Length: 427
Image 1 (cartoon, rainbow, N blue to C red):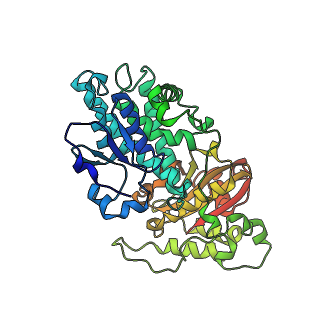
Image 2: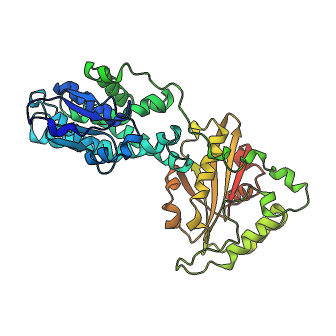
């Protein structure tokens, strides 16, 4: 239960404080680590039950937002984990957790903010679906993974010539950043993922093996196998392997588009709100209908080139940047499906074929987009998944590139020497 007992403290008479927290939570652990350094007595309130007690009036008297952690001090309650962290870090100036100079203190605050704004957000986006706090969104997870790699690279460059983030000893900067990274190193940063960042790994290992860290976190168990969130495909649509293969379809009578290729998430004739953009060329709607209802090689592709206007439309290949990590077909299917789910604003001006190459145990993901205009449109660039791909324009005047476009849209042919495994269409 909650007992808002901070009013009974005699101000300044004791340093014992109570922390209301979720069990073994990264946001709370960094506070407890700082308390070990400053020798501040903090106890976790044993009667507090998370999350039910967060909804009570007594707890909201401590934090009106109803979230943890909350620290009850002799002067009153504090909430927001980094505010509490800073408060605890200032309890014993002799320890110099803020460095030796005002500039050091500024650098420490810089890294504390960095931990909250640049690490915690993508870390939560990656980990929360694994912990089943939120539904799995494969595209958001892929974006979070990319962001975390960038952060690890930034840290790696900074720590190449440094033992700690600020100065020559552990500061609040190290405590905050390690605190934000710790669940990642335990849950998802397996040896292959962390290998490119040796200086970050060395610094992290140095920090977590300090007595103050060990007393709160225990011995680190490094991630060996990356945990993966439950697949949303298992809860909704069947995965693409259960769809008919292109080669099989060509031997059967013509069927509606949904039977010919994996259906896209929104029916083609679904009404859409007028966003003020000029109406799309008839070319795109006609192409989608021809592609959906006619034989791709015999009818659709000849129609495409007959009506092609290189000054009005363009074709783009996109290769997923992290193909070396694609070892589970379901994950790769989710990446393609997640990208398609976020392409609604592109629907009026674009069409795309996504292809998974390889085998059940090792894949590559690639796409070919047909879009309005001679450059990649801004509405496509704004989709989170866009930056996860390396893009190159296809030249239809180059016969080899034109043939590759045809192979991507037909799901057969040479395909650049790669083996077709599965495909998805956005239209």
